[in-house]
Length: 300
Length: 300
Image (cartoon, rainbow over all chains, first blue to last red):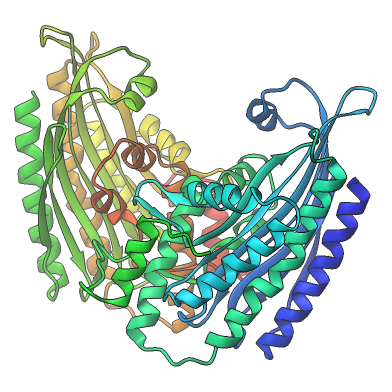
């Protein structure tokens, strides 16, 4: 399973980065191969200053070794060996008309002293953060998520959509980071779902990513926008930073476990603003977005 | 003591904001008076888009009531009533030649059920974050800190200088946020220092702030700078954000205890950049700064 999924994310990274390069037309991904001193490493691919993508990363990693102390505490276990691999991506488009997207698919194994697997699970999801909200884009993104989920279990979409709204929430702002999508974790073998079934589900979601995001980019990337709309995007990107640095477990986990800083913080947007007490105008498109972030919508 | 110190920070806020307005010459502070539903409130003063100060806040607050759960846990106490007041300031100058400065002076009281004081302490400090390092500025800032300390105890400066270097440290980057200054906390009554003595010490440091910072601003505010130097400032401001959102206890505490978000996050810089794997050129001024942030210097 470990090798199968690791192989899958390598191929997925290739297909996603080549498609995104084709859309961008100007910038290409810069590749950094890195090693983790304690075991394993990764392949980070970063795009910057493109025609469409101002900054983004599509990173894979596979790490293993003895569970670090902070992870022991987190999982509530004693000494153990582990293996973890996954693909993480964040794309910050230049135009405020094109939403930021985040996705992640990961697999985890824990071993006893004899190297037997004692626990294993999948996790992941994908979610959208628009600066200007086109309802049809939100519907398209969620519909694609639902279609992928429904092939496996009709309860998955409503459940993982709700978890996504809960997880990507800036509690200190009382608003969601974006308009959600899917978020699932600790997907373990059960009577009805074997690990093989979970693999099929997680890769189904992985395979749906380009279908969920690319049509939105194509539709919005050439729309014109004003300096004020760009400012609004940069202010909203500040909220993205706040979520990732204050609340996101994955980011904090990485920062506290000697992860590769540049690969972790590739998620942060290129140009960001913090304006004191910034409030959108009454009745504006910006205000409509914030109201929707405060009260998640059923898009499908 | 409570009233005396609260009165002091009101006056200090006035003297600091009027001096800063005089230096800026263009922008003035916007004042927001706010109330805390659970008791107390504050007076935030914010300056934005000035000739010298791109963004800054000089805020006072005085809050009281029942200790919130998160504070109980933090202080390791049971149910208690508390009073806390302080002045917090952060100034982000427009020019990368002028350093960012942060300062804070605060006082805390805890009460038993009958309203008797069971614990009380002062805390605070002031620290400098340059983007281009002029050694004479660092020396001036630290010398002013030392002079204020030495009037009370010759051990204070080395001790609180070291604590400042330790506290304002981005562990995930292995570098200091800036070149330090003073940081002290839990300054409680002892055989040699009464609360009155601590009051005199803390207000001495408060009174030294303008003397420590203003001459540096005056000296550097009219220096010319390039677009590249401004970019470097915005990239370094990213590290400021990282510290405040990932590590700063005061910020996280405020975010998790229903503090006034806009007053807490006024500390975040106005325009910020995150560039993937940004590294200063070998032998450059930018590289020299980073090396000094990695290995704190004795400036006095």
